[in-house]
Image (tube, rainbow, N blue to C red; front, side, top):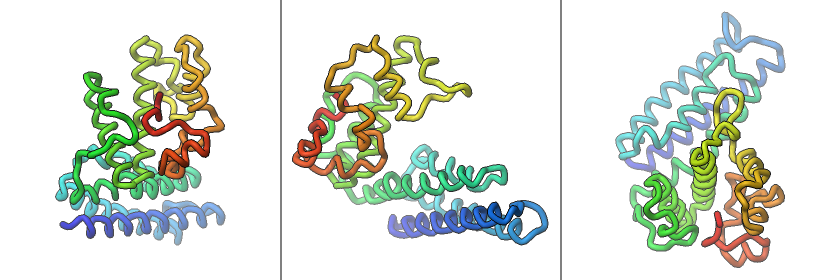
Length: 250
């Protein structure tokens, strides 16, 4: 299957998911259940069946194009939240937002790389040598981040930067056997914002002034998945007061 057809399936999946959330919101507003023998229950179940059928077609298409199951685990997780009767309106709304973002910033760029050079020619975000001889997954993240920037997929580049920072912080705490300090009551690691806040508050790391300024709360673009406006050029980065791309995580 061509990548264009897979993109069409992805867009249709997002559309079905959006319709499902709309139905769930209307049912909630009218204090109607999404299960049982009632109008909203039947309509919701129809959406779930349609969503599941489309998901199967999409995942088969993605696999046929060479994408591995690990490439769309997040996609599957968001769809699971949408399908559950026990999910709240807020949870479903957040899930469909994340689904759209993940589709546009991760899956579609991956599909487009079917015809693009998988190894970036430039290193405009981070030099690969910075993570050489460390962890293989750090090297993969840096390669993907540089490649996304090179092809002007700025949202996808921001996702890679987010993943790099999250993983780096977790590695630091695990190396010092302090990982319990960055986990919630369920034993899950904090999200990026809280990871950064906890790291900045921990004086034992002796962070540089530049690091503290880069990841301070007022530098929202660096905590956001929609950071393309801060990634487009070093000139704009200087104008806004952000560090140059080669020092993103410095």
